[in-house]
Amino acid sequence: MTPASILCILLIFLVPLASAGLTLINIGLGRSRSAAHAALASLCVMAVAAIAYSQCGSAWQGVPGGAGHSLTMAGKEWNWIAAEPLFLSGRLSDGSPASLAILLQMLSAGLAALIPLSSGADRWRLSAICASAALLAGFTYPLFAHWVWGGGWLAQLGASYGLGRGFVDAGGASCIQAVGGLTGLSVALILGPRRGKYMAHGIPAAIPGHDAVVVVFGCFLALLGWLGLNSAGAILFAGAEAGRTVLIAANTTLSAAAGVLATVAITGIRFGRPDASLCANGWVAGLVASSAACAFVTPAAAVAIGLIAGVLVTFTVAYIEWPLAIDDPGGAISVHAAGGLWGVLAVGIFARIPNNAPGQWLAQLVGIATLVGFVLPMTYSLNWLLNRFHHQRVAPEGERQGMDLYELGAGAYPEFVTHNEEFTQQ
Amino acid sequence: MKILSLLLLVAGWTIVLAAIALLRTTPERSIFAIAGIGVEALGLALAIRAHRLRRGESE
Image (cartoon, rainbow over the protein chains, first blue to last red):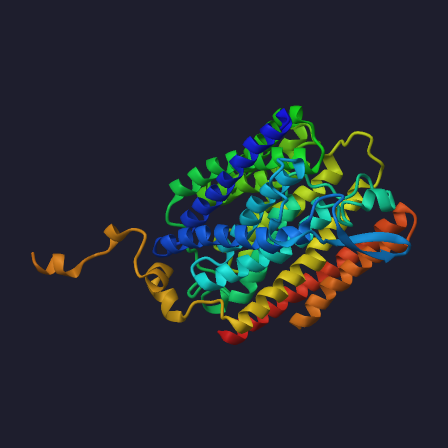
C-alpha cells in the first residue's frame, strides 16, 4: 500500500467518531425518557446501514470507471446507476483506492442514516427506524452517491456539458448530509409533531433537550469525525493530494468555529443570552457546510462559509418550527439539509479549483435541484410507502410513557425514578 | 395537494435537466435552471401548506 493509502485508512478510522458525535447530540437534545431508545436506535441504524449498503447499496453505487447503466439524452451518455456485483464480492481484498472508497461509503451510509433520527425523536418506532435506515443505506444514498462519487451523470457534467469540473462535493455535504437531512424532513412530515408540541392556534411549546453537556461533548467528537470524513473524501473522491490534508483540516475547524460563533452572537442578541442547543447546531452546521468545498477554498473563505451556515441554522430552526409547523426536535433539517445545500452552493461561489472551466456554479445548482427535485420526492415516497405497510409512529401510550419504557421496558437513568414505597416506609 | 407538490418538485428538476441537455449557452441554461428551481420552491411551499392543512384538520 502507498503512504497515501495508509493515510486514507487512518482518516477513515476517524469517521465513526462523527456518528458517535451525532448520536450524543441526538440523545442530549431529546427527552431523558427517550435517551436509551435514541442510543439503541443509533446503534441499530449503524448496523442496518452497514449491512444494507454492503449487501446491495455498494453494487448500485459503484466506483468511477466501473460497470454501469447509461441513458442517452441529446446525444450524451447519462450514467445513472452502477452495475457492480452484489455482496461486495472480491472488491475489498486488494487495498486499492476503490476498496478504500467502499469502506468510507459504508461508514458514510450509516452517518447519513443517523441524521433522520433527530427529526423523528420521541415518536419514531425502533422497527420503523431500522426499515427506513435500510431504504436509505440500501437505495437512496447509493443512487445519489453514484451520481456524485461513482462517476455518474452529475460528476460528468463537466466532461459532457462543459460545466466546470462537474458537480463537486469532496466531503459529502450533498451525498451524506443533504440526503440525510431531506430524509429527516420526509420523516418529520410523515410522523407529524410530538404530542403537546403545538398548543391551541398552532403556537409551538418549547421542549428543551435534557443534557447540554452530552450535546457539547458530541460536538467535539463530531469535529474529529469530520476531519477524517472531509480529508478522506477529498483524497478519494475529489483527487486532492495527501499534502492538502492540513488545509482541509484547518478549513473544517475554521468553518465549525465560525458557525458556532455566529450562532452565539445571534442567539445572544435575539434572546439576551446564548442558547446552548442552537449553538451546538451552529457548530455542526459549520462542519456540514465545510464538507463540499474543504479542499478547494482558502481559510478565509472557510470562515465565511461557516459564518453563513451559523446564521442560516439560527433562522431556519425558528422558521421550520413556526410558521412552517414542522416538529424537528434536533434541528436536523436546518443543520444537515439547509447546511448541506449551502455547502454545495459554496463550492460554486468560493472554490478555486485548478484548471477549472467556467460554469462550476451551474453544476452545483444542478446538484441542488436534483436533491430537492428528485431525492426529496423519492425519500418521501419510500417512507410514505413504508408507513402504509408498517406504521412508523408510536402509539399515543408510548408518547405518554416515553420511548424508553414503552419500547425497551427500562429507562436510561433508573436512579431518576421516584419509588413510592421508599416514601411510604418513612 | 401533496401529490401535486411532489409532481411540482419533479417537474422543476426536469426543467433543470432539460435546460442543461438541450440549451447551448451558459446564460440560457442559467435562466432555465433558476426557473426550474423556482418551480421546485413552489412545490416545497405547496407540500408545507398540505402538511399544515392536515395538521389543522387533526386538531
